[in-house]
Image (cartoon, rainbow, N blue to C red; front, side, top):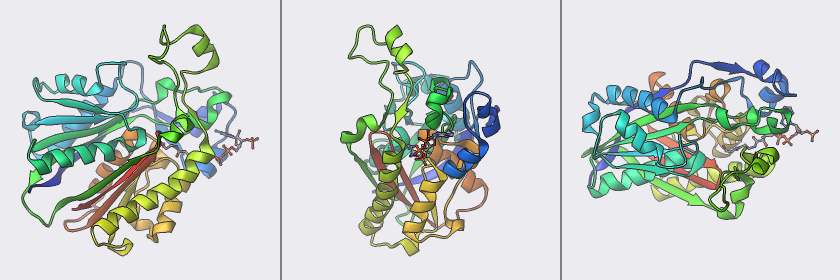
Length: 331
Ligand code: UT7
């Protein structure tokens, strides 16, 4: 049975840097509060006109270049986002069109911060069962256009950033390499703990002046509840993956956690007994880019030489839904 290999990774972040100090011009917040509670120093926000599909295209081209492949080698696209360019169709088809891949299937994944891990789970199953041999897996997000940047929305507005990350996954025959497992979960009892209520197909029209006046089109989060579940579910998902592969935490060489809050990542690190050098953090520069965080962090870690052949890589995510999951990869 073929194994899923990361043949190339890439990322794109907008040029516009928004510092914590910039945010103090918009809302009642401070650099000290944001750094102390989240670890974030700055994030990237798009300029008008940029689309999720275009950011995805740029990240994808970098990943294809690293893989040494032309876009025409791609058999399928899996794209994770919670901020599609339009309500429908999914962003995957816009990326497919931009890459000139007529006829190639494009699947959008709606699993929020866990989207990349969910997408990896699907892509890995397709590769292992032989349905596709080369899959472009992308996580992309434009959060900045949907945030309440007044003091009322400050708990979320300071957290989120924009960006895209991509991986080219190929079928490999070397049994000693590749994705070892993926484990994904959800608990819809907490769907409203982090959500955006409008626009909604439950209502006609789907968004009203009332919704906008009440701010229902902005994301809302019960921060403490999300935090509490994140620091429990992420270590749990890693332990589940390790147990399934007869491995232990001491076998992990590098952990790429979803970048939601530096304090969350530090607690996960502590619970797993990992050293600083074994955990990738880039939240201080990008904030939380939702489905894009893991592929951006992974692409950066590779470029910094933090992974070598044979290393055990662990990916772990938690987010709105709630959804969560992990993956183990023998590099
Ligand atoms: O991607 C996955 C989903 N997201 C997450 O995993 C995020 C999980 N949650 C968190 O990261 C944290 O809960 C936050 C960073 C969102 C908030 O940190 P906290 O330590 O839980 O703060 P809090 O919500 O308890 O708020 C403490 C105080 C409040 O003021 P009072 O009521 O004590 O007067 C807030 O109004 O901090 C206030 N506050 C802020 N102050 C300055 C909330 N946001 C801000 C802000 N600047 N941006």
